[in-house]
Image 1: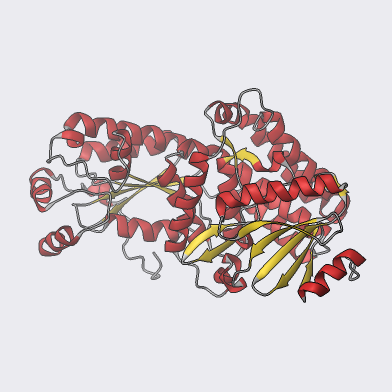
Image 2: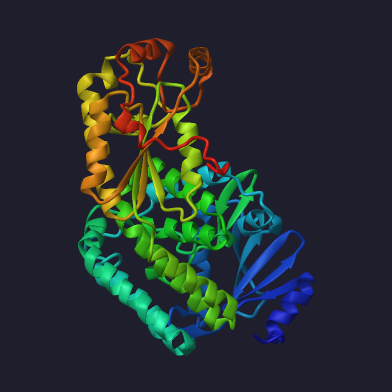
Length: 477
């Protein structure tokens, strides 16, 4: 990149007294708490900034789109003196609050990512949907960019040709297997106008809330994508940064928030695609270490561990959600998901996870028929998730032997191993926890606990063979 600015831009910079940051496609001027982003006059296969009109249009689009995510950051358009060029004017923020930096110093928390999951789901829920006449999200449009990456990388990194051939072969096979799923995703309205570049460097903490910024404005096809592809990028980025615990937490919070478990079969395809995109960017940037890191991550993602089904078993207040959260975040591959029966029961009845049903035990959403339908739905979701090659924890009481047997059989029928996370606590502790419980999907009370004590069926000797040691002997969750 050239260190010499065009005369018109140098005059603008001098008038502002600004510092300049240059990227491949833009200049960023920084001064007095503000930033001015100016697009370079260039044309690339994925971008057209070749004329003043195109650059102005893309400035307008950048402002429109990013105000959806960060209205307080994106202030407006400003002419670059009398040059005929335009700048997107932004409010500056503390760079140390960008999530890549927060993560690097070990300060990124599950609470931050729970907030991000809510933010992402909220903007996805309201985003425009790609209609049936649109090319966005069509199976061919999904496959084309994925294979284009390999074409580019085979030229940029010939020493990695064998590895790239293997990844390309996996991509072709997965696409063939998932082609109908991609078509179904579009038919279900899951292709939406999104951000398109949701890695940690494009997320910032503002007032304690995670805020996306700098979405892709220059290429519609990179922005009109499956909602699962959007989230897969952030999940992959957390894995690349060595935080599978946080990757697991984010993915599960988004799935629980959205209820879009039909995304699970396509998630790994999109994550591999995003990893290969980053490998290509690294190759283009002359970063061999980054190229190697992202290729290795893509390879790892194509070889997930064998699936396992874990069910919890325990009375209300015994720590099932707490312990299953620890187990979830302990997966070094971030390949474990969780279904909570309390959340799915409420979803089945049109209630948000923290909404109160105002029904007594055995009535309303807690009738025997409601429980049967809840477990039937859990079984369908379990089969789909295991078939997609993901491990799963089901957070439910599982006090009845028949319920446990059904899911043990389900695991066997779908090629997964089986385990039980048995949770216990003294009666007084159970009562205390239930009386203090706030802000949780569970509506269990002491009255519910007393009923559970009447019908609980203890684990059999055969079932005890499947119980996970807790806490684990090595001290990890």
